[in-house]
Structures are given as structure tokens and as C-alpha cells.
Length: 217
Image (cartoon, rainbow, N blue to C red; front, top):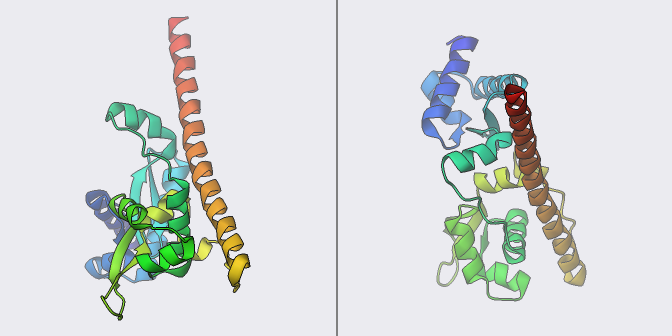
């Protein structure tokens, strides 16, 4: 399969899926190298953005996914009568920080780090697709292990966990302080992502009003 055919196949697979698809899986079905699949995805992503297309292609670890352009979030919400997802609570951000930096983790480990019961928050984040079960711990009761998901990466505006700020090897009160700093960083990342979407929506709305005014004139 040549380069153009591979790009076309990648685009078709991702469009039909609607969910992240691993580059390894695409490589198998297209009889290509995984590196070539990722390169094709990178080229498509650049083309979509340069052409100001309504879709974007993102890489999430070693998977690829198509999604709508953030500047059209407001129009999509109104057209499909969708409500914006609620912002993450401080408790949710704390659990996500622990899961992101120490995964896979059990609920008991999360509660030990936070010092409070976290069953409700873990359940909410699991329902929202931010964390997911990934096995059980070889211990009494075989507690469930949790890890972050691709949706977590998208929400935080990163492509892989390697892009998270490093967490130093510390203990005691310093560990709690450092973890809080990471929680604050995650909160800032979420706010920045929301801000970019809202600013893009305002710019789109302003351009629409200018065009409508020009037509009336």
C-alpha cells in the first residue's frame, strides 16, 4: 500500500471507528509498518489544521483518533443540543493526579494518599471514562486496579503520560505538597483547554455576526 492509500485507509478507519484505534491494529489490517501508520496520521493531522478543517486527528500514546475541531465546540453543542461536560471537581483532580502518577492503583491506595473515602469519586471518574479498571492486585480480596484513559489525555491536552511534569522521589509532608502542586497543574491544564475552546467559539460567533452585518448592509 503506497503512502496516499495508507493515509486514505487511516482516515477511513478512524472516521468509521469514532474511538481511538491503535497504530498496531491499523498496521496489521493495512499490511504496513506501525511507524508508517503514525507518520500518515501526523501528515493528516497537519493537513486538517493547515486547511482549517472541521476535524482534527490526535495521537494518544500509540493510538490515533478523529474528533471535531475545538473552535466549533459551541456550534456542535447547540446543533446537537448537548450540554457541556461539567468541570472536574477538586476531589476528582486529586484522584486523577494519583492515578496518573502512580498507576495502576487501587481505591485503597488512593484513599491512603488522600486521607478520605474516595469510592464515590472513583465511581464517577470511571463512569465518565477518565479512569478504567485494568486488572486486580495479587492480594487479599483481589482489589481492582485503575489506570487513566485516552479521554484523560485528551481532557488534559496531552498525547501521552510522558508529557506530565516529573514527580520527584519524596516522602512525608513534601510528598503531599508536591502532589497538591501536580493537582493544581492538572486543574490549570483543564482550565486552559476549556479557555481555548471558549475563545475559539467566541471568535467564530464574532465572525458570523460580522458576516451577517455585511449582508444586511
